[in-house]
Image (cartoon, rainbow, N blue to C red; front, side):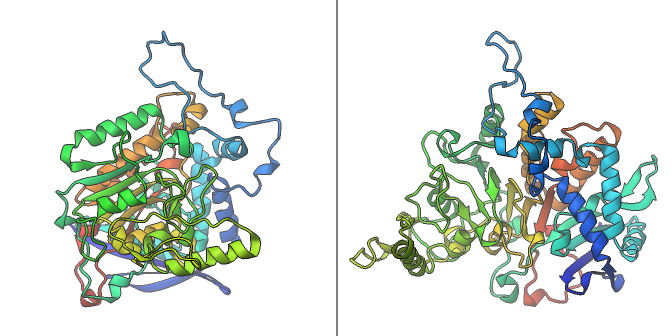
Length: 517
């Protein structure tokens, strides 16, 4: 079936926020959003999300999340229940309790309140002309409509697919954009787009190759809390094992899944640090912790203080893997080392620089009286960590690019490193324990379920369509049988960043390439 793309661009300017849209059958048009109303509704949306912390100190000190939603009781050893009731590693810290209480009482956990919020957001950010053009295009049953988002930072967390169109569905519900179109996020313009000599990473070429799974790849006992319960982690290990030779993952008992291990697995020959050395992989799935934005956008592996990286150690002694690391690798190592030494001389700060780097990177200069540690060859990170065509990041606010003036973060770094599609989240993903406490039901696992869905989408012939169909099914359940675990707080936070072949040689092509949809 033919797909008609609507591109929705936006920019925040001193004079206002502008949205522009166009398609092959719709001439370019634009609208100016009312700034005061835009700020009002996006702030209301932000306060409904776990990321927002500015006014959480205003909550009543005597009232905590655990007081209102008691932790589930731990049964005795004689219990016949088959559920893992042991305390989860993914616990709720005391400093987060006000934030979680606000979210639990917020509009995204109530169908009526959620619809009111999305209606307010739609009124402020959804131009009537755009909606009219999209709905007219969608009436042609011989094609699908795909809305490609390149919206301004002020709208970076808006779940566009949930916005009402102003019409009713056949069964009397408020129609959402998701009811009539698919939605995807435009990946940032990449260096390969300007260089037609760089081959585009088509998934079809490796669809039968193994997948790489990084499911909570650190040890929670030594490197901080996990995001999955023990039973969920065991289920993931079994799921990977069931894939046989098509499922690659670190051996939790024998292998340390740090960035050095990851570099070796991602390269065909780990003794060589050179271009065109990718190991054929169909996709990579990461389930874990992420934080930060821009160059500091980073995810947690099993890195310790000995591993070289540009991110300071955290309190548990873990050095997180950042977008800066992925792009730069050991490139400009000497400048980084000189900066560390300068900080040490000026402030007395300890020199925090690891001395282990990926295999295939030789020592360029041995330690001397000026630089008391060996210097590595300078190798770009895109060579050391070449990415497969598809990647999933099931973690807190893993896709922060739409909220930034300069759309760079871990997603863009992964696209630069060889991916054509990255599935990530618009906001913080709460762990299953949050939903279990709020619903008082130990069987619900929306975070675990999300990770499985992302894996299935990455294996699908059309991952964007697969993701949107799953969201439609989730929306139907939310309308007909709403539950805390089934709220849009989890499933509406997922999006896909798409970077199809946009090289100069393909500029002006008319046919829509279905392969990356």
